[in-house]
Image (tube, rainbow, N blue to C red; front, side, top):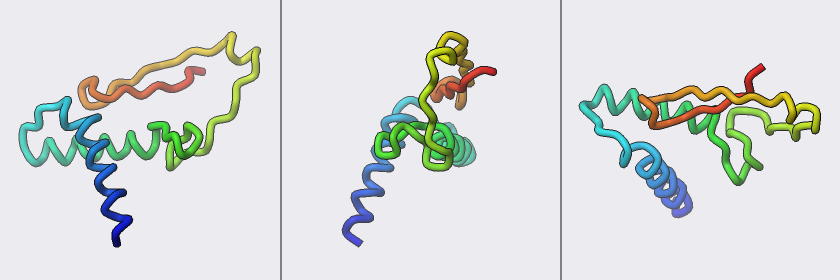
Length: 91
């Protein structure tokens, strides 16, 4: 499958740049934990240009109305010791 190689190469490059180049991995258990957390963040939270700023496993975000912008608050949650940051709208 010639196309599959390009997909995997892109995934590995993204994983390396965003996670592995920023962390010191201690052992296989720590590596598996980091990969699980990164995969969860990538699929459930991270925005993707090809999906119009939506995550693969979530619905596309709806545009905000002007009155919603005035009351807009954002909460940040750190993952993997601060290597990954998740931002969500606060109620």
